[in-house]
Amino acid sequence: MSRFRGDRLPGVAHPLEGIVVADLTQNVAGPFCTQTLGDMGAEVIKIERPGRGDDARAWAPPYWGEESATFISLNRNKKSLALDLKSPGGLEILHRLVGRADVFVRACGREPSTNSGSTSRAPAGSIRGSSIAPSPRTERAGRSALYLVTTR
Image (cartoon, rainbow, N blue to C red; front, top):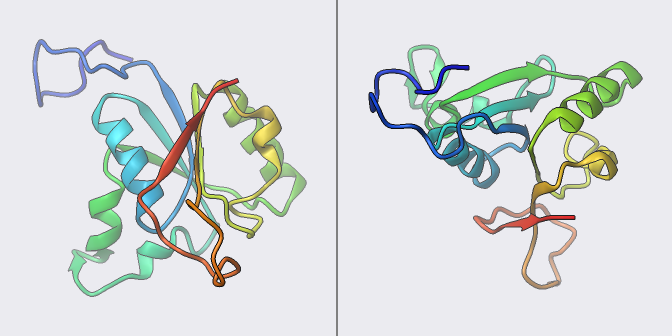
């Protein structure tokens, strides 16, 4: 990896250059969090569902070319990898990625795609989506810009 990221700011090193982020988020808050890490120079590897990807890929119009403008606006500076997290092979690849990553970002949903049981292998810098307090609607999915950083 080069010391400088592209031609955007020649001669200025990005603070997270050399940091690898495993991104297991979708929709808005998580992708915005990891996009910010990518903007600061981290290598972000986004895990998506095969055939469907992040839900935000379907949030259109508006389109940018043939892609959802919403998805594009929240996922710059990322690499994408489609993994079936319900298969042993997909989980093994995820475990290897998380083991190599410096930071693991995930939402705390109940779906296998966001709650794969892989947190036991999470690196020292983990970020997870969370809610502030229980509510009568706790069982329903929600969106929040709150992400927690945890360290071991």
